Image (cartoon, rainbow, N blue to C red; front, top):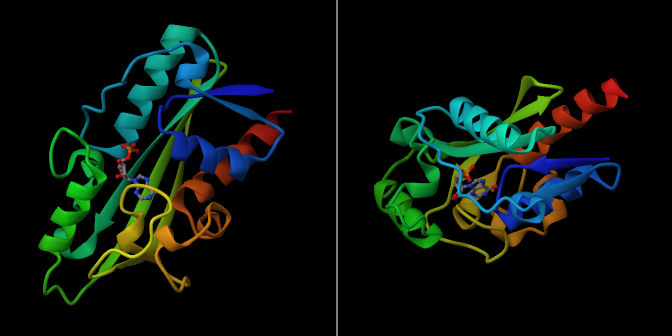
Length: 192
Ligand code: IMP
């Protein structure tokens, strides 16, 4: 079975395919022949996830899912949150985003943060949402070079090092995305 994943982020595709296993093949947008950058105009992860899956469903008429993820830092009142991708500007630079977070977190005693993922699935013309949360802490400086986004500055609770020092399999033991995907898998397995 195949399902279109409304993303062009190769890291997300790899993480989700590893989490799902071989029973369901995840097709990223470019492999489905869709060459668009879907806008994320809303102020919640939920609304952006719905927008992405709805746009792709309208274009293809096929079952599909999207996900939207944000890093929510307690001491920054939940920022960067829904603005995580463009926190330091429109060019969506991972490095510039991390620099801004580290600068804003200077001297903050409370380093707690969480990643939150919302998946929007469109299956047989109906929408379903699933959420995954990973609690953790923001480091004072970068550590590691694996993964993407804020991985070098985020240590999950129960982990000993940043996501960027972990393999994909190790990250998936803690990951927000994996938790949301597990609910998606359970939902899909009940349909069969
Ligand atoms: P998106 O809008 O869901 O693509 O993600 C927003 C931003 O959050 C991305 O550009 C990354 O900077 C960050 N992000 C999302 N997922 C992760 C993750 O698993 N690790 C680190 N950063 C992430």
